[in-house]
Length: 225
Length: 225
DNA sequence: TTAGGCTTGATTGCATCCAAAATCAAGGCG
DNA sequence: CGCCTTGATTTTGGATGCAATCAAGCCTAA
Image (cartoon, rainbow over all chains, first blue to last red; front, top):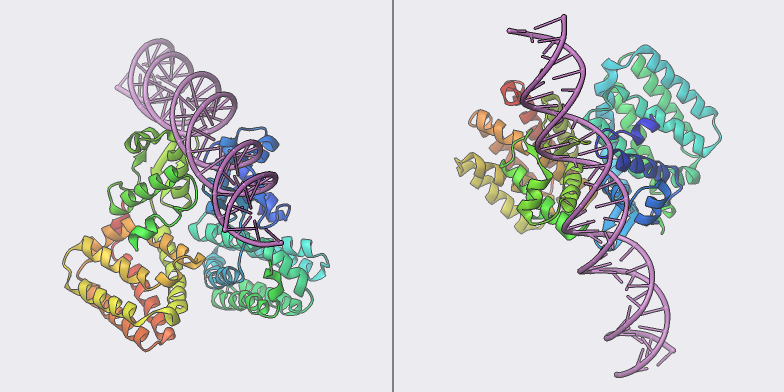
């Protein structure tokens, strides 16, 4: 899923530009590039054995996704989020992501739900932050895999991507506190999906997302820059 | 507001690319280019007295906004929406736009509310579809002017832009039927804003948007292509 | 007559070169 | 001593030219 998200628009644009965009996106999401880091066109060009032109295309694509900020005649930086931005993005997720999940309830196969259950269990067992983030992302986004190509699916993936880095910092900080509730939510969601109870699944997911946003108020230090 | 929306990212990218994007965006929104229309890079380049390079930048920007579809080695077209896409976009609007309105209630000045009231009245008096669309857009988007620069504001503007053309076709078809309800909603919203009743304003706006989506079920012919 | 392959034309994609703008540093001035 | 100004350097932005790719039309064969 993560890989698909990285190459989701590989069909569009020149092959070179799309490849560079996919790799740079992966680099940003993995934390290799931190928010605020300068991105030099020529660096990327050399690194990918291409000219600066497809690099510029890639930067535009990532800017459109909100991962990169470009200033005319100045350059490109990995996008930074203020605390207000993060809260807004989570407000949007809180309203939009349950919608997507609900739309997918009738499309979810039984074995897909099995996989979600396994992911929830794996998350509970995991003690590594990085691994937890990967599992959590797959848990949430694979639940919408059926609608991955829809406008709504793309929007949700972008919301995840934009908050990815701060989620990492955030999870590192407050790991252990809200975990029990989060795992509980995951199991509740799986249960609701099994019963094909879309309304309940949406409700729990909304609360689940809201919890993270509210938790932020107790950990503002993540956004001190 | 419309003008601002067109040039909202004028600060980014090369000046030429941004200018071309702004003008092309305006052309698409005004209906000059219909969905599905082919966009040739060289045409735009000649028309704007520039080379194809800033044109490609412009196309990328508009593709990111969902207004243009680009296929590698094939070309660019004005984006088309299926009926399912339109419904999804309206589902998202239904959930996200009230959120934006609610966040802006404390920021709205009294004279801004006066202006909204005037717009609602003007819409009622208007008999021209095109004029109605302009007024309606301003009514809705100027209510969020205070948060225009936020990620949420940008998202809402893009949702409006992507559905713009189909709204036009749609309004032409079902003008007169749902109008009374729509005007009623507008007045209710203004009243709620005056009382600084964010919850009520959000509720009415949600219903208002939902009405259009539901009305679509009775007019599927808009999406016959 | 129709279906398939091929050729030709048009259009996009990428690389190189040149110009313009911004940044950074050093120097002079208040 | 600090601020502003000015210059050189770096980095991006844009134009042109050529190569790659796709689409459509033609020709050939069944």
